[in-house]
Image (cartoon, rainbow, N blue to C red; front, side, top):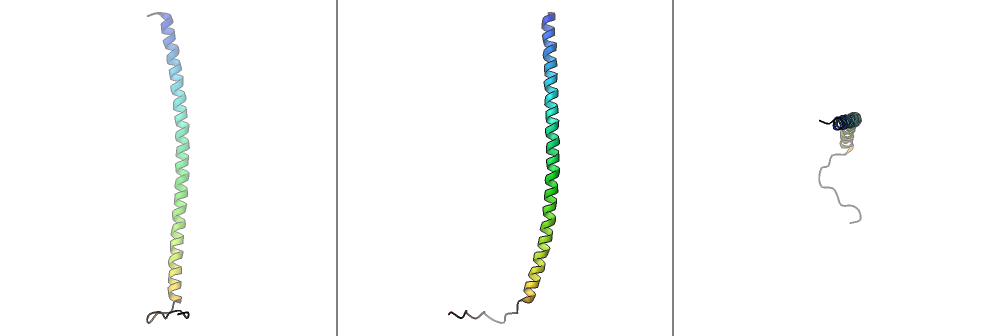
Length: 83
């Protein structure tokens, strides 16, 4: 094997290793950002579910209050006065 050719292969290997290292670094950064984003989205979803639970309980209480205020109907409702 020719020494010049071998030197070119070693240089190419170093470039490949450097490129691979750069790609791995970029992937690690991307992964870290995605991991952080997933954690933030999880927090948002959890907060939304808590809010939904609170709103559903409030709605149930309002229904109960409204039904308690409504007088019981004995028959069909009379027509409005403009008939």
